[in-house]
Length: 257
Image (cartoon, rainbow, N blue to C red; front, side):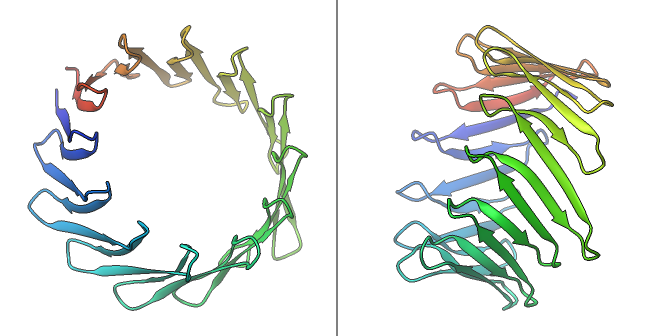
């Protein structure tokens, strides 16, 4: 329909307004240190945000006046509690030595737990539903194996194989099916093949993505002289045009513009 989305920015590059293809305007207000403090929605309703002296958000007020508050552990700047508008709470706990998140307690008292390897990588997580998932890594810290443990003692194992550069080249799913990944000499992803719907990618000499192919169609990307995305050709042959203001900020998006 030829609709155009428009964007405006201040002198510091912060987005101050966004207008959709129907003319609905959303405005953004920032404080002197670059923190978002208010969003004025189409129609005039507002969302407001408050912060502590360290830049951590302490309160969010939505357009209906509901307030969510955040508290932080003394001296750590780590969130310790979220208090919802209805008074319910989410609590966060950390280990004392490494300050890693170890537990989240939700509004109904269920817990989500995290255990870590000595190097700080997640060893296992136990979800709010009690589902346990364990992780194994190689010496470079790349994920090598993920095991999901069922309540009946069953295990679903996903394995990851990598090349000498640490790039994922094969993922073996719990059912034995595989997903293969290929790269060019520059390290750009060329293809993802699960045996059903293969994806293929093309790049230009600047390693910018120029085409994305799947069975149902192709996306084609074009760039301007500054390397910014200028247009996107969709599988149905419609075209999105991206216009940029001085400084490179996105100014508008037009359909078939």
